[in-house]
Amino acid sequence: KAGVTQTPRYLIKTRGQQVTLSCSPISGHRSVSWYQQTPGQGLQFLFEYFSETQRNKGNFPGRFSGRQFSNSRSEMNVSTLELGDSALYLCASSYRGEGASPLHFGNGTRLTVT
Amino acid sequence: AQTVTQSQPEMSVQEAETVTLSCTYDTSESDYYLFWYKQPPSRQMILVIRQEAYKQQNATENRFSVNFQKAAKSFSLKISDSQLGDAAMYFCAYRGQGGSEKLVFGKGTKLTVNP
Image (tube, rainbow over all chains, first blue to last red; front, side, top):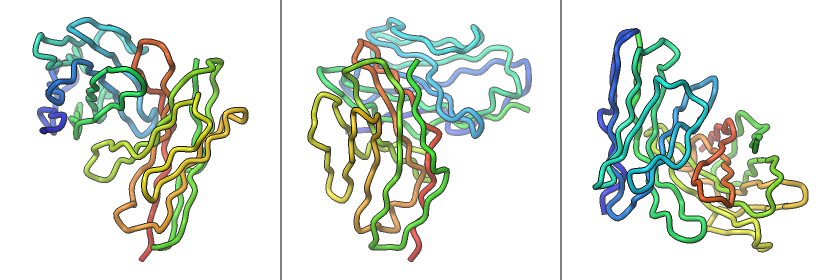
């Protein structure tokens, strides 16, 4: 079974631009979460989707948005990029069954804003 | 809000020896889940072990085991017979019992394994 796939792996953008990152979950997983990882702030929760609905959102400005499609694939968008948005963006999927269904992470997208 | 603290930014261990990574957390919830994830240089977060708070028995996965002390809100990871492939960043994470699968992560511990 294929793991969580994130594209692209690396991205370089300029301040003020916007960017879209993509995440394909493990087959059969309907829950997708996004995290931002930086050296200073560590891993921070961005948002969580299940059945195309946003279930939870982290403490990020409105420039950060996401969506989930009917096939459970998810995208996140960052508009008006700032230097501080440079980070590793990790996507995770889960079956969201009973109990502690673990999150399965992708390899991440490394975004650099110049 | 829940917080997770890993007080050891870096640790090192000799190959074949045992090392313990510390994690404490703060929560007012009675039911929750705790996880240890490993992040090698490849960047992918890999689940090492998980613990349900309602279970008193400590979780074990091969060479990895935890010492879960609910009253002390402590969740340490013990790695036995350390191998070179164990070198990575280790993150402790908390998830509440509610409908969200949001994880709250600690800052991580960088583990170096010396041959």
